[in-house]
Image (cartoon, rainbow, N blue to C red; front, side, top):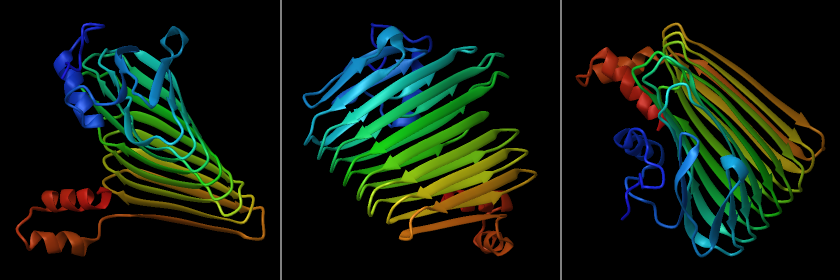
Length: 317
């Protein structure tokens, strides 16, 4: 296979780029099928497939992905890496998913910052999912580096679901992100389904804010929003979810958080029924690790620190 870092635009730190790409997108070689790999604001590799076309936007501001109707079993990889201190990147990606298509999209962003200046990536993704289409979308965020400069990620995802369509979204903030504001908005037509699973871990003085806003407009459409998070150190997390049931529909919002040390977690779920047959539920739970859980693991030979780490891993699994 070709190298991930090709001659089109050599990355400043090829080994770092490869490591981050493996972390956020689980790729170590050039992906099969359609892909676009972006490093410090420019594509270092792009390829379309027979059924999936990737077109660059003007001035390098993002890409457009077109999936032909009826496409089955194909993947699209669109990871982003920032490895330059002081670099601020913004990208607009639009996805046009044809009717009855069934595809997997793997995104994600990693920032390596060894300097003193803030490095930032803002990704605005808009999905237009056609009738009967199915999309599984995975987005992982990660930060690293020995510098004092902040690592900031602000993803925005807007989802338009046509009749009988389905979008499953898994977002993970692994570690090392100093500040993030994650905004997801969706509107659903008849029998469309939206499933979002979010996992976040913060530590130190990191901040993470999540905002969900979903309009259930269609008959028998549904949304299931699930957030699991762990807040350590002096970090702060805020979770806001807003579901409007505008027809005979079903909506569920759940925030489940573990708080440790001197951290702070805020959860504000909101549901509004604008139709007599709208069935909406919200749940929010914030608490520390139960002492008996730690004690049980310590009786098996783990230290208290290792026991806490094992519980956290299981919670975010």
